[in-house]
Image 1 (cartoon, rainbow, N blue to C red):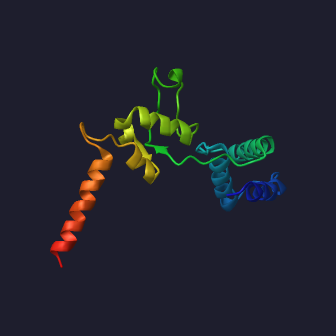
Image 2: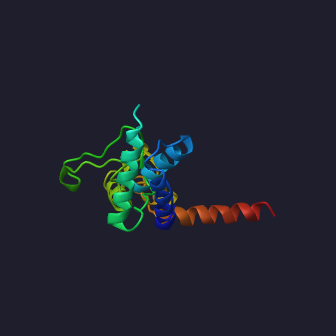
Image 3: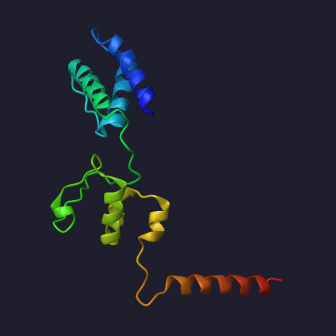
Length: 155
C-alpha cells in the first residue's frame, strides 16, 4: 500500500468518524493499522478503540509523510532478539526489526535462522556456514565438473 492510498482511505474514514464504524470499515482500519504502525491491532469490546486507531494512523502518516519500510524478515511468534553482545542488548521484535538488523544478527548468529519465519531467499544461501575445511568455490567447481561428466556419460 502506498502513502497516497493510505491517506485516501484515512480521509474516507475520517468523514464517518462521528458515527459507529461498520464491519468493512473496521477491517480497513485493522489493515491500515498494521501497514502504518507495524503493530497488530487488538480490538476491544468498545467502539472507541477503532476511532483511537484511526487517530493514531492519521497522526503517524502526517508525521512521517511516508509509509514505513517493510522488513523482508519475520521472526516466529514469541521470538525476540535480546542479546547483550548485539546492539548493546537492545530488544528487537517484528515491530521494530529492520532488514539491516536482521541481516547483521543472522550473520553473527547463523544458527538462529530457525527462529525466523521469513528470510529473503538469497540470505538462506549467504548465511549458511560452510562445513569445516570446505571451500565454496571448490565445491561449486566440483559440482559443475560432476554435472559435465554425467552429461557426457548420458550421450
